[in-house]
Length: 125
Image (cartoon, rainbow, N blue to C red; front, top):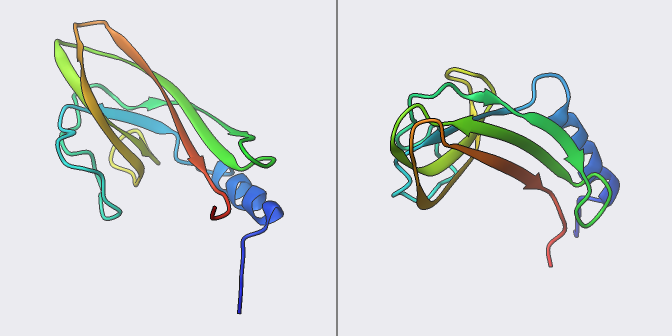
């Protein structure tokens, strides 16, 4: 049996993700040395700054409404090097939906980074 998530199904899943209590809180950290895994429940080393509620929307990538997007800007309280970001369901604790790590970005106090986090559903190539 062959099965496939249709374009309408993709839009429906993304729409449900964006409804009610979507993951829209963005936190960052200094511990991005370990690659993200499907079992992650937190950032490796989350920084002291409060998670920010981002602006969540549904956008079009390859097909209509196939991407859930959150945009948030975080401001540093101190000198630190940010190397990971996560998308959570709450300002404190909450479930981690997406975790990414990257080459560290050195910051001074009051420096900021704007993150755009996207979850895109699609068909296999």
